[in-house]
Length: 120
Image (tube, rainbow, N blue to C red; front, side, top):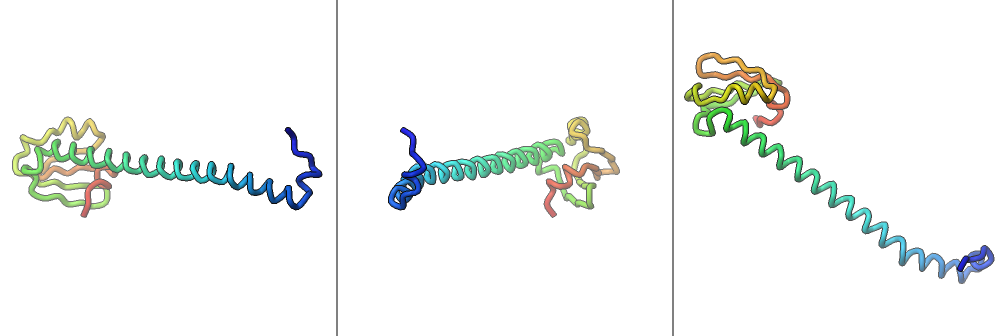
């Protein structure tokens, strides 16, 4: 059934039309907005969880939390002083695309992504 233009021009029918429109389309629009916001929040949570997992993996590369004495950050370079250099998995660090230089018990890593994950 089609609504003729004469019915919509009638003030009472116009009111009925807007009530029907409001009851049908506004809740659907609100549901779409809520679903979109939930998807954004879920994606943000997933990204932060993956960052936490990669930080834990970096700890393992340096021989665990017990092997690390101190960590200092300077722009894109991170210096990690360790108790035992033999426990450090240098190949895994290099495979992550991190430049590595060893001086005594200090491991200097050069990577912006790695440095961004280190908190002051």
